[in-house]
Length: 94
Image (cartoon, rainbow, N blue to C red):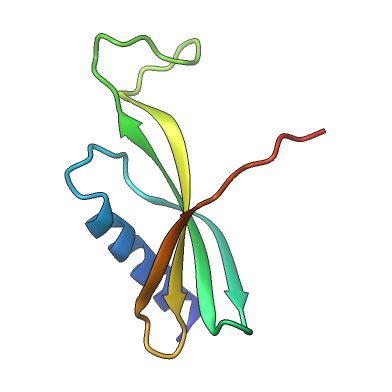
């Protein structure tokens, strides 16, 4: 499977999984291939929609989305099948 095919599969699966949950468009964040597991690990980012009455987290933020999330979609290389979805935990810069 080509890298671009893995990204398309990851976005498709993430869109299906979070269907109806009011998320922003899914964005590609990171791509990793694990040869030992024969899988692509595609990190995607999105935000959950908040109600218009809630205040924005950042000064000047006019969007209706907040709570940025990062998920790793695991896609098997040989057939493009969905393997799993995990959280992508960010570590603070020091």
